[in-house]
Length: 193
Image (cartoon, rainbow, N blue to C red):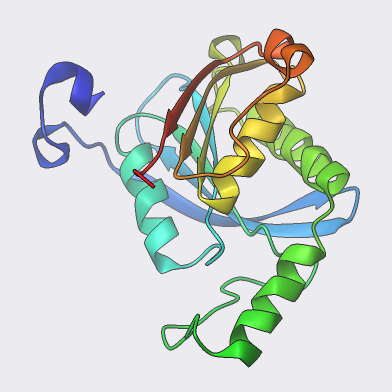
């Protein structure tokens, strides 16, 4: 919204936000997540946020809260719930440390493509079940890096979404059949390589 109006994030109106830790049943277990709801009456569009490989942690909570402050019902999930409760990495995580990186890789390897697609469907259903969510406006999905790839995968299933935004993700190409299945508007932000 800020880019469309020419306003910076700080200049946009923010509403009060309620933050609530939630548990969501999936085909593979129970996912810990955080739900942000803007104050005020009426229902709002929902947004599912898939974090990067750092998972659900304070910075992703901050991002969810800011987005909810713009008038969205926001769900930020722990993508690694099969392996560990969030946060899965601490402030001292070092990607150059082979042991720490191997632990994180193990968390990612526990996430099958089908399992992640099932998760996404459960998360969208959870958002739609919230009284604050406007189901008519459809859910949007944001993903960062690894989460962007997951968001694009959900879009390729033909899920009934409003929009998908992927930030510096991989696996962005879609086959003809996958592209034909897209029901959502898709925006991909990539760095130059």
